[in-house]
Image (cartoon, rainbow, N blue to C red):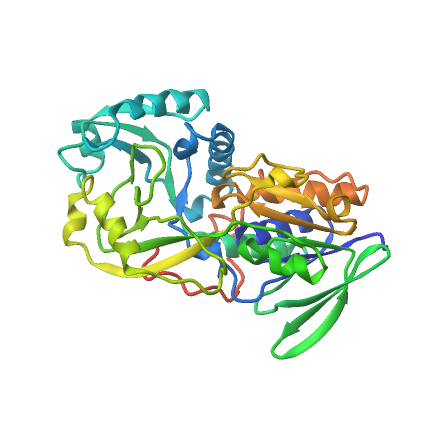
Length: 400
């Protein structure tokens, strides 16, 4: 092993680019390989919500606390990617009235700023709300541009010496007695083999495929989520205040709004049915609180696949996973040194995930390198250099 370990990060979403950035800032030699454009997996197929954590405060307080902490960090380092819309959890007659009180107290216990509003006060903030809304909770949700933030991470990583290779699938991982030895990459129908001393598998729902290249079994529970971009203009994020259900959130993006989401298990993240019934469900569930949706146009429909993971049977080194994340240490778990897999998590907590993975990688090499990503602004904002040009999955029309 040389003085500077060479780490291959597989996956070009927010988490993968965040890991590449963190490791490169710590002085490691980093290559990131993504089979398609950047943000072409779950990162580019989300509703664009910057979580306050309120969504999880009742059922998953650990994830809620992580979200509000990272919400603050991202507003500090990536304000140019965020629209500070605020968010409302609204009480409708069809939803359990006591749940709003539970949500309010749970938010306070998780240190999430929360303010109770009357129906009238809520409609002053969001005129689209139904007159049937009697109460609401205001929380610091926001809207985020996932494409711009992912490219900002990749740009920062590149400027710290990382090689960022979109359109470059990993086709093989070679192991020897010491663990991972090399990786085969394909680009423009040409293949090349690169020596690596560590592989971070951040391929999301495709993590099992990458693990299998090294003879490792990683089982995820991918679920698809349907979303629809509409022509409704909204001032704030709107959530139905009820236990987690399908079709309970609207996220504004400029003059458009994204409705989400469904939650349906799938076997293959590349091949799954997309049903109009799922889109209809989103409108049916959200029209009672936002009546303007009755006459809204569906501009674009899309589906994302969440890389959910059940850690009960695995040795996790981070996270206690519901909507949290897990880092699998394949040396300890599978007797394969030089490789780890990160699964689960959320876009809002991608930087925290990257920090945990990078801590783990550095520890495996006996390196004491501090994380600086929480205090270093991402490029592309005021006073920082512009973003590099990387191919990304084409943004949803008028996303921002």
